[in-house]
Length: 100
Length: 100
Image (cartoon, rainbow over all chains, first blue to last red; front, side, top):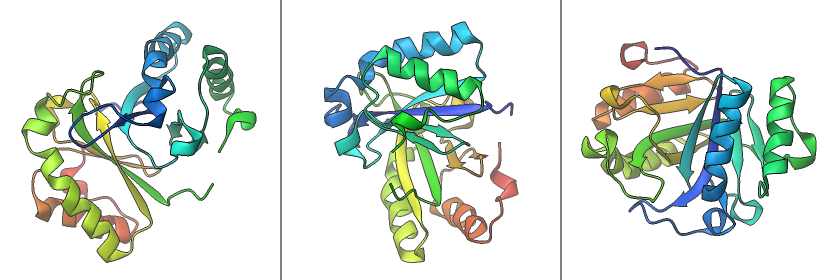
């Protein structure tokens, strides 16, 4: 299969039953998903965006993790922060200010 | 933060609303989660297990992805296959037979 260059995971606080209930979703992680998806497309980044269940960093939510770079970001609450993270990713760097 | 050495993602077919509806879950991916979690603990692997929404490999579901190794596995339907994958991971290798 063709693998994406970057795989971006955003915590959506899914419980095993699928119930959306947890800090990341309460802080708006799901609301940011369409923006992130559009930015990936607009910028032409070879990246797959995937929502996740809890990644056990609840106090720092909403949490975003990018592999294979292994960048863990916390408090991703605004479109501006998403932009900073994607700007850095395009430059092959981490947005250090937002790293966990 | 202390990052896990391996991050194991298993598709649970979550829809954005949280609804569990899709091929990976229908084929039993959620049923395997407790087994995978227990195996990680029993083996003492430094790994975080996270469920995900669709990873767009539905025809090959249930899908499991391991980062930062970037191992994409398909048709992870039995405990034996999980064992093969974790055996290989402990040896720093991929379980090539199940790679996508």
